[in-house]
Image (cartoon, rainbow, N blue to C red; front, side, top):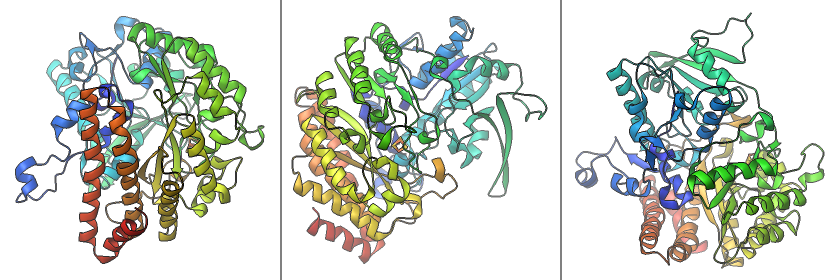
Length: 570
Ligand code: SF4
């Protein structure tokens, strides 16, 4: 069994975990005018590959075996070993050495794919709706080219199966199924969510090897894996794909504990989220929490075998940890459970920890929560705690319509107050929120909704000039309860006000986030300092001027919006 992931998912990103978003950057523009200056200088490259490869440095390996791997891949590895596969039969390969492990005896090559075709929300924003090829797609394609070359060279009949949270993308570009020679694609049943295969990995690989997934299921035979052969017609051609559905959610005791180090010291503390935002697929999963001892065991694996000194706590909304959304009034956080969790995490001896995600409402619903947790995890001016939070929109109408429980115990009318208060509370305790916004939410965002977002960001800048936060606009992708909706097509339907949201968010990041704080982050280390200066220039100045050029091309309405933001909301 060969488990693999591409370079963008297997890089330490020079120790800066947030830089892993760089995989979403555009790599190639196949539509560039061959007579243009840029084609003469860069050919098809957009973000220079030399820069990308420097930032996305390869992970260490031992004879081709990856020393660190994405957390989800580690879970599948652990589940196979738990379910009876021998260690010598399972390998997690380094992307540059995957061919070493593929030969006539290889039964299955399982690829872990989060954004295989560059259709994730961040990537769609950076590539103008996939008009360019992102590095996520570029390196995933390269991985499949290597796998196929190794199979052809050795006569291997290994079944290549793609799994993880990005596999839904193959439904939108089925030609890639054929191009990559995929035997199958693992899909969840609940709105296309990534399945939780680690509950039954052994049984799944057994079924693959035994050929039980070769044909669509016999309706009279009971199987926990449902095989569906989908047919797609695109541009007059017909494509087929074998989609394998798995719909069980393992209980916490059925979820294996990792046995080898994960990327970035990531460990999980919960699955699912009870907040019910309509645009999110996490909320379709049942809510489960790891007990503290299970979390500690995984951190200890990372420390012992990976020398890791931090624990990146994967959580969908950390402030939901330990509560029951059905019985807890107004989603009131369980402060005691959170304090116990973080005390247990720090007791392992790690130096730094931070949760991946959390809601603003959860952060302030109990006024003692953030101050108490901050003391436990030793947050300080020299130890900032980064957390990704959904800002989503400044529109009270949209937040009420699509994510009202995200605000509980508060009401949609209190959204602006909530955002401002939460930023203040988080910053005072040395937390820095990285906000994501959704552009074109369910294709229901009006210009007035967009202007409400622009005004809210500006109000925070004026009222709290020293506040620390970043804002990243993402384009709407139809997942979760909105999976039947259409993608927001940023390339063709960017109205002036939405361009304004994009412009304002990057202007904020450049002026208030990147320029102001990146220098501080890198002040002690010349390499980091250089890196952050490059980052500041790339992430800040380049997109702003690109948007100004785009506005000039689009015409006076778009240009007027840019001018208005510069004059009134800068
Ligand atoms: S709070 Fe976050 S994780 Fe939970 S449902 Fe909403 S968007 Fe999803």
